Amino acid sequence: MSSITLGDVSVLRTVEYEGTTRPPEEMFGDIPGEVWNAHRPWLAPDFWDLRTGLLRSCVQTWVLRSAGRTILIDTGVGDAKERPAMPAFHQLHTGYLARLAAAGVRPEDVDVVVNTHLHADHVGWNTRLVDGEWVPTFPNAQYLFPRADYDFWNPAHHHTRRMEAANRNVFEDSVEPVVRAGLATLWEDSYVIDENLTLAPAPGHTPGSCVVLLSSGQDRAVFVGDLLHNPVQVVEPDCNSCFCEDPVGARDSRRRVLGEAADAGRIVFPAHLRGERPGMRVERSGSRFAIRSWASLAATA
Image 1: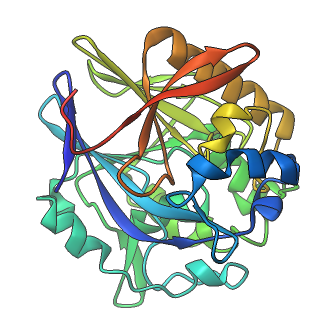
Image 2: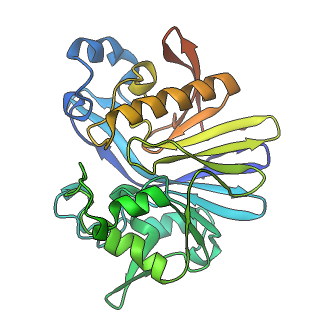
């Protein structure tokens, strides 16, 4: 299992699945066709399948070992979940736990689960089906939920939600069972996980979207969840995905986090970048940003 070491923290990933998703113009309606064509040489083939015309993506979990603990960032789609409005996520059976085991992680070994936000493809393995009941997959873990997202997706609160249909059943099968089991911590403002890792808000994609800041020794990184779905959003930072609840807030958070990453030399790890280039070092380029270099999990920083 390839990994990268940042200060005193080891980072690897477990991929639940990968494949093609949507056409660029459907996923990112803010970007005109000529801009996509200009970026074609470096987006293909890792992030754009020119044969089908579809973008390429993956669903994965970041596995961090820090301060003697095992920490998961986002838990994918999950098995046997009812996702009628999202066929790609409906009733999957992916072998995810076997892949975690191959990385040396048993469910009972996990100490902390971070959900960067509460969308279906970031919380699914929070729970698994046992004798017809959804129970926490990681029985010894502290699950960290952004309070703003917990309140927003709670069906009792009747919010207007852009992704209402796509996120149907998610709160009931992947969030509330964790709360009932007494394993959830609802945090706001910021949250210190340990001396190396801190949660910070980055709202817009959802009200509670957050990032995980890593600072250890001389190394810096940020796990940005869905702040970026595709690396084109680095060079086109005002471009939102079709999934953002608050487009203005998402743009503001993206620009702020990318600016801070450029200034502090943080490696940016989005949730859905596939292949051998899952991380980026970015720099300012006028009013935009550029990818200075790629970070491979096969390397040691």
